[in-house]
Amino acid sequence: MRVLVTGGGGYIGTSLVPMLVGAGHDVIVVDRFYFGKQWLQVPDGPGHLTVIRDDIRWFDGHILEGIEAVIDMAALSNDPSGELDPWKTFDINYLGRARVARLARQAKVPRYILTSSCSIYGFQEGILTEDSPTNPLTVYAKANLLAEQDVLPLASDGFSPMAVRFATLYGLSGRMRFDLAVNGMVLGGFKTGKIPVMKDGTQWRPFMHVRDAARALVHLLTAERAKVRGRIFNVGSDDQNYQIQPLAQLVSGAMQRAPALEWYGDPDSRSYRVSFARVKDELGFEPKERPDGAAREIEAALASGALLAGPQTRTVEWYRHLLSDGAGSVDVRLHGVIF
Image (cartoon, rainbow, N blue to C red; front, side, top):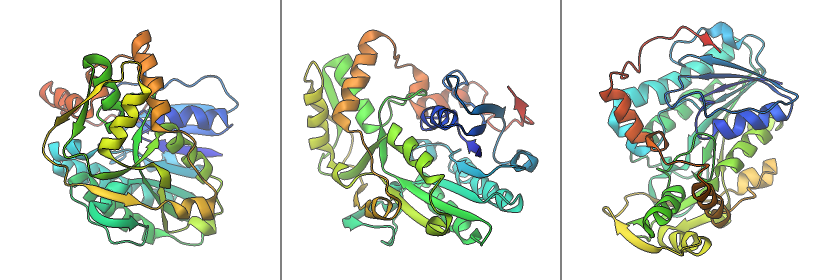
């Protein structure tokens, strides 16, 4: 299958693209590579990789000719990043991805997957399904919801868009991120002997390993189109709905030093538990990995020196660096440079 992946150089993409190529797909990655292209390492496989440095807001739609599926992940990621420049977040995460979906429909691409987030549920009691009300509290979450609302109505007999609302991710990946809860806990425990825990620790959040997120996207490429057309799927695991304090204790118990917990910040305004029954029952997908295994893997990589916690591993810090460095030429057009 010829698959276009936007944002393929990011946290999920650097796990996903090697899987796709290894499974025999021909992959075209479109990415701005704000964090660098070096993290996208793809071993030889039966598939083929083409990398295009460009922006979803203005790339030439001819890129989509002959494409059989689009996995649209290009976005300014996470809630704090979204608040740095709200308009740019809406421009990329909402308008940019809605543009990709429209171009895909015009190019007669049969399948389109929008990666969204369970963060759109915000703060709610009970177990939330895809049919529950949404309550986006941040610019990032609101942009995801707007993208869903623009993209899914494009569904037709010849065009099958779907939205996947990912749980909060964790785990080792090519373009590593330490601004995610589990990953940040491991880094803090490794460096200081203390795991940072956002107050007050009772907030609920669903979690999933980044490799499971990549596996889910590969799995969805072959899902029956009639089952996914115009629909939303929460993607994660029912048994990985965690309160933050017990999650931190699980991470601590998995680490060599068994670090203590250290509280920080104001109480989190986001708290939600999510049902992942639909993707399991209707599409047959279940995650395989767990936070304690991920904690051991990340700790081992840090201890060996194979993983460094540089500024590019913290999304907000790196965006601030780019903006202060003049690379807020985040809007300079690149005109599809092919590597």
